[in-house]
Image (cartoon, rainbow, N blue to C red; front, side, top):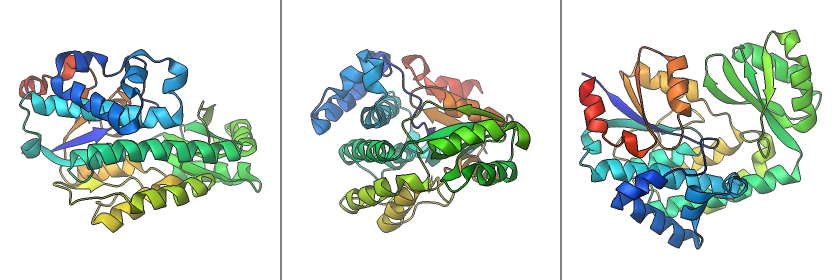
Length: 314
């Protein structure tokens, strides 16, 4: 029997206009956007629908925007009669997407979630601004090669693996000078390196101050019991009680996102259908690189809302 997991995207999946077509056809989506605007005291919906891109890429706007669009699509699926309760065996999300996974599993309320990820984005931006830093995508290397590259290029600076996205694609994170050395030394280690346009060294020790700040916010956030397993990025284990969730989300700020291992754990538990809900197609693409034999379905626009028909078609 097929087992289905819902997966949710993180930063980098945003695009001006995201969610607009869904809001045009779904009252549930429109309600989510209205609730986001009210909870944040700003027209987040305008940033999603109209931009400009410079505003939407700000970390403190981008994170609540992606969370809100993902939830709007999720609620639109439910509005159309999709029985997600019986279909959903587990959830997972890439970095920011882990918060959406917790929402979908019933552990986190929407208002708490959207305020939480906005604060998370602001804290990450503050940490990035205080220390010149960045991220580099490493193509063609396994964990051993990437760790060796980091050790060679660090030279006393912070430089660590940050995102294990799929086999052959690992992102490293650290001080600007160390990132630049990693690009220069990539050929020596038999890999390709591409510097990423990001605000700073996310998922590295440089985010320690952000983790400290988020810990205080998480302590004041209510987390309920999940109605299905939610896989955590930082250790690929299931979220447990509220204190466990707060700990995992805090550690995620400075620890690596083990996305490949998270998906492989689910595959090992018999999951063979993965449905990406949210803007963009990043996770659907990564799924095909992790295991092409598993079914990967993307729901990012209004065209994808007829999910029952897609599932029935096999």
